[in-house]
View (cartoon, rainbow, N blue to C red):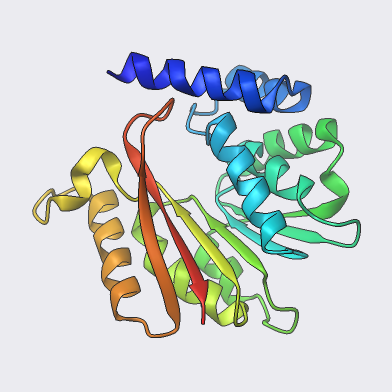
Length: 218
């Protein structure tokens, strides 16, 4: 079945997305520099672009840069005076992302901050509230990252969290996998926090069986 999921993703990309030299180059550079192939798919990247545009985002936060594939998609959604802050733990990943962002022509809109995301978030001020937040980092920190997104956001801020189904692993309360435990903690937090309206959508495709949370700050 997963082969069929990939074929459908390829069909979607061929019909709706077309060729994208900058994103293709980013994936090639990531592979050449030894980054893991865990970027969002092309269709998911375009979804992020559209969601950020629909939100009218001028200030975007991304938690988890990797090689900057999703960063490029989000930066393209910004107006000329827009700004994207993206947080990355690994200095090597951040260096590769800088190369990819420069090649894509969006580096002028992006501020890459290197170090533990929790520390970077704690140092950020809500003076210029976030309009859109994409969280795709260590799953153990998801609930904390969403809480920080609320603090740094405003009424109407859109929050997207990736990888929340984990091929059904989210159902296993005794998995012993800290990524699943972190994802379940995220769902507990979302269900209990009155500041958010949220849902989650399962996905299948090039990234197999997974899903994302879509939330809005009330």
